[in-house]
Image 1 (cartoon, rainbow, N blue to C red):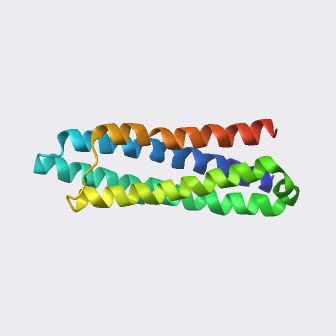
Image 2 (cartoon, rainbow, N blue to C red):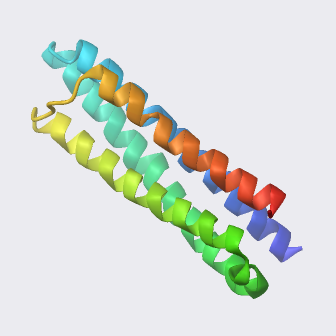
Image 3 (spheres, one colour):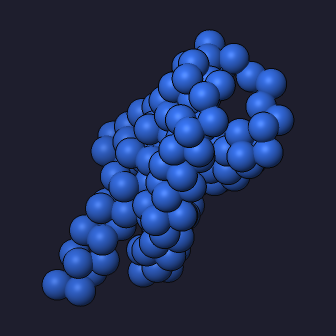
Length: 141
């Protein structure tokens, strides 16, 4: 029963983390398009900061902790090649997470040089990684 609670917690954390990773670049798009107004700029900075600190960060930490525990309890999984692909995708998601934070910091400092098309495109990276991870876990090819 405890293992199932652990897996459920992991899945909930993954969903929360992915939701934030998919939503933050959309906020960046709207920030670029509307951020010339100082009041709107401050509002977007606050929304982004809250998403990062209240949802994205804690969800990533819980995802990693529960994932490591699951991997420790199911050590046989580490020998499968599909798990290596999944873990590489997770590392890239962590790097993406950190990159999104640096992009947010650029908005806060008014140093963003990216246009809305860049943020629309970069929004696809977490989606692609999520698809790869789900297929690896479900299909175990």
